Image (cartoon, rainbow, N blue to C red; front, top):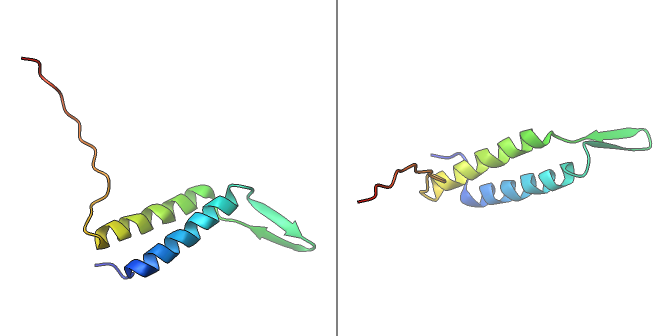
Length: 74
């Protein structure tokens, strides 16, 4: 059971994806005497992965499944 609603997760995902886009242009910047430092891209990716996993659980999906198999020739 998730602590988030589906709408909350979608909103948070949009916010974190916007943060990823902003952080990819530079880690920090200054205006006058103020400086803003953004999250690391790896931290943002971790938050996005967590939120996507929560959304998949609400939607009844497990997320991507990778299957390894060998084919036998007759």
